[in-house]
Amino acid sequence: MRKDRLYVVGTLVLACWAAVTYFLYFHRPRYSEMSGAMRAEERRRRMERDLRDFEQKLGQQLEENKRLLEELDAMRRERDRKKVEGAEDEKKTKEEPFKDFDEETGGGGGGREDSSSVVAVLMFACNRPSVARALDSLLAHRDDPKEFPIIVSQVRGTGRVMDSSVVTQVY
Image (tube, rainbow, N blue to C red; front, side, top):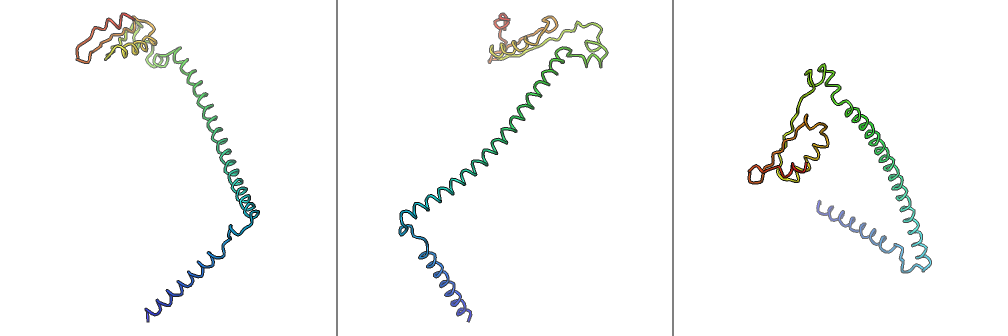
């Protein structure tokens, strides 16, 4: 009994599937039977539809690009504003670099009465180009050689201390 029902349902499903396939296959528009004018009209409509879609997508992309450019411009203006503020702060710091420290400690030199403190800079280097770059950087920030002497120790790759007079003679 169950097998009979299964056969009946299977046969009905197969018949429905065959009817739908027949209808879709034989009732579709045939471009080979269309006249040349009808085919050209169909192509023109498709092209117009594709062109409208492309134009719409292009407009959306242009709007998105405008929005992104406005955001980028705002970010650039903000960066420039911060750079100007930073330059003003740096200028104030360069004018009076230890002002806050002096106010906290009650005078210059970390509480010392005289301002004749000496801060030596010891620099370890591996090769001459690195010594030259580092010395250039240090000398750019040094005001008084007596207050900030620079000591260079250059080591060869073998571990022996190298004569740094060759580099320091330039300076």
